[in-house]
Image 1 (cartoon, protein in one colour):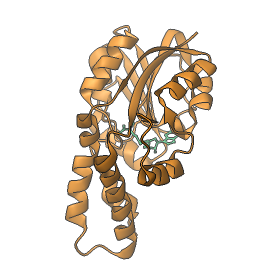
Image 2 (image 1 turned 90 degrees about the vertical axis):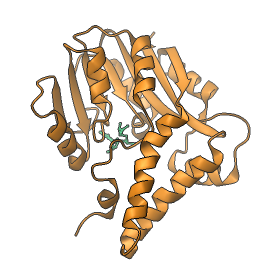
Image 3 (image 1 turned 180 degrees about the vertical axis):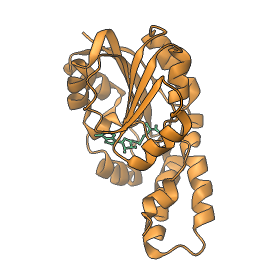
Length: 237
Ligand SMILES: C[S@@+](CC[C@H](N)C(=O)[O-])C[C@H]1O[C@@H](n2cnc3c(N)ncnc32)[C@H](O)[C@@H]1O
């Protein structure tokens, strides 16, 4: 039987908010060598690999994710390119050293403190970690957003909390910005189009998955001023 999650998510361009414009900004802050070794930690379908290689054209990306379907998608796109290695693996497995650990919407699975603590020993001298993380953008915290996000991301704080966590983990913040609406649309627009296509005739298990994704997208559309994704570039102190 098909997993309803992958009925919805198979072959999506990306699995969380992000876009080339924000990646380019982060790469400008990270200032990588052109032959950089990069870890794409929790790469999903590999949406960011092209952008990462544009900044390190003679480098190499190790792309890891726990889901074989996503790694299959990465291999289908990059399998012939020696600059990319894709593995079904825990993001903590690759040993490096890496000039950059890139983790778009995935570091929270380890926790910021635990994740940054782990990657410190995987960084080359001068190496950086770039990651995106959900944050509150102000004091207005709508109940619907608190209910859903606090359930999924219990340690969610604001930008000041994020900076404090980064520094408490022994890193310095080199730059941080909040992802644009375009970066969210890059994730939600294709997902919403797929939901509309799958909705007629879906069974109960699929309907539950579609409902959850639709609720999450609607929450962002209704309350996008209250929360966002911060993209941070950090280096060990
Ligand atoms: C929100 S998605 C983001 C995917 C991708 N970075 C993107 O922006 O499209 C988070 C990804 O992290 C992966 N993931 C979660 N925990 C992981 C772990 N411990 N090791 C490797 N991948 C993990 C999930 O399978 C999922 O594909």
